[in-house]
Amino acid sequence: MSIEQITDDAGLASLLVDARGEGRCALDTEFVWERTYAPVLCLVQIATAERLAVVDPLRGAPLRPVADLVADGSVVKAMHAPGADLTGFALHFGSGAAAVFDTQLAAGFAGLGGSLSLERMLDQTLGVRLKHAEGFTDWSKRPLTATQVAYAGDDVRHLLAAMDALLERLRSQGRDRWADEEMERRYGPEAQLVQDPDQAWRRVAGRGKLRGEPLVALVAAAAWREREARRRDIPTSWLIRDPTLIELARRRPRTVEEARAVRGLQLKNGPQLDGLLTVLAEADGPAPERGAELPSELRNRIKVVLPLASSVLQAVCAQAGIASELVATRDDLESLIRVVAEGGDDHPLLHGWRRELAGDELLRLLRGEVALRVLPGPPHVAGRAG
Image (cartoon, rainbow, N blue to C red; front, top):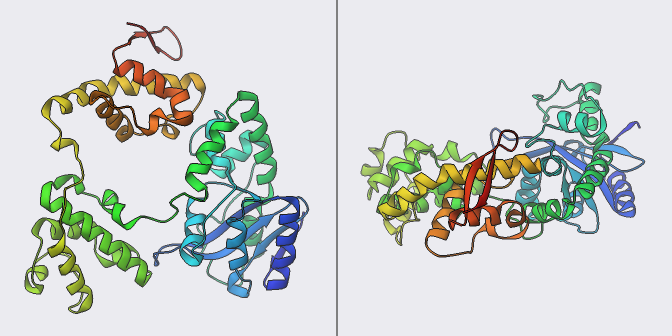
């Protein structure tokens, strides 16, 4: 299938008519994301059953219709690890997503491994081996070479076939519903495709040093930084680096002079710095719950029980052939131990496919209803009635 290069509205409209007529397509983007808050979408690749095209916004093709397609629940979009692509459309066009089929996620549910690259996923599902050599190209430069166009086209050329192969495998394993549920959670109309400023503090390196009022100040300062970086369309680290943000939250300067004493702060005097000082001064409310603020008995319980819960999770996932990182993180397990210890039963691991796969087994362990035993072979660890 030859690669079309679309540079205008008419060419794109024809392609999207075909995609909507078929009810599905493969989609990918090439972007640069070093100097901006939002990914700069430089190319969009779309494949249908009969057509393969690269849509070039830098040569005149509009991307709003593509954003509308991404949000169209009547058209299934086969994409591979689409998080950054969807973030780009959301930030530039305010659009959501619907009917996205993530082949990387599906491969994880199908037992092929977690976080597979496109190349490995295609090799394992279709036996197709790509020869990619343009992964670090600057997609904002024009003209594109024939090699670059071929590379971009290959990113979607086989995705529809891979989606079909993965769906067949998932259905034979009885896991298609699990995959659908997780894709809806991550990429559905209600999914959070853009960083929530009020949760930005959770990504600040060094946040574990702060407790109480300084942590409250960090939550407020990180939210301010996120909003300001988005407004100016620059990386958050260009505005204030994490170590400086931590120190600002710790000191909570009240004046420009006090702020200038914080190492690494490069904001100029004026509305921006004044706004940050106001945010720090007005930061109030309870600090987010942290492990160190838990009662000592509960902290000790989490410390002792966490390795057991992790062993159960690993064993269950190994037996099912599902990558454990799709199911739960260390933080998820810690919070589950706390919830159960406090007599609760509302936790993400106790809902939907996660409960079917691992939640019930973990719940029995944490309630003392099962004991662990070592097996001579895989999955090596199993529970038995206590």
